[in-house]
Length: 338
Image (cartoon, rainbow, N blue to C red; front, side, top):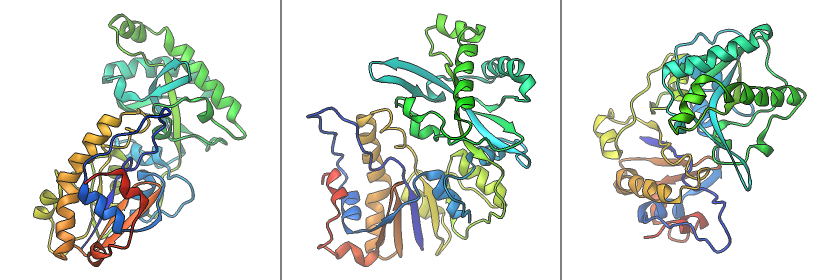
């Protein structure tokens, strides 16, 4: 039995002011796991890590838009798909910071109002904005855009200026971002939001381009996740997707004898971008209680052959016997106390 935990945001690189020390969560078992682990390069993003589980071998990031469109009930079988997610932009002394649709709390009717305005404006370009979910909007294009686009997770909480489109068609797509900002600004739906002191929909963020991936296969391990990319990959591969367990004990109780599993724990993912050190500390300590502490006990009893933590940049692999290799001292373990 092996367990892969994909935990983006577990080891954030805090952008802190001089003299500020980020909190040190109390997580002695996580500290022990990281200290004793063998470390290799990670997949870079949870979407890429999940796609690898389903047999995707492409370069760069997987075609997230086509994958999540499938999860949202759209037919992503033809053309190139592009996520065009609603965002809120807030200028400050350091630039223009982006906040995703979680800050907007849109409903289906509001989403349709923005899509209808977009469709009227870009009908001559053959563009139509699809809004099957309040947090996930899409464009379908006949050809892939010749442009490099940054994933939404990379932009959340950050100045967008260094993250704008680049490549052969960068000018066109950067101009479209500006046009959409101007279009949305004075829409009745936004004026109503502003009157109610709600954050306005400042524009769209384009990312995740590509066609539907082919040749995916369901893994032998059970996959547990609540995220749209995981659901889309499972549907494309013809496999099942299991709900996220409350913790290790919950997973162990429902797992078949000898069954391996992949679990996506993404509650910490946006803490770094949003500079939410308190939320990160609380989240790590909750994972310590629900997952890491019982996992160390299970490894010590050899109920699990290997645990792998994929944090994004790196993968940390621990076998039962590694827990006693006291000479291993991975520096990342010092981020946690206990």
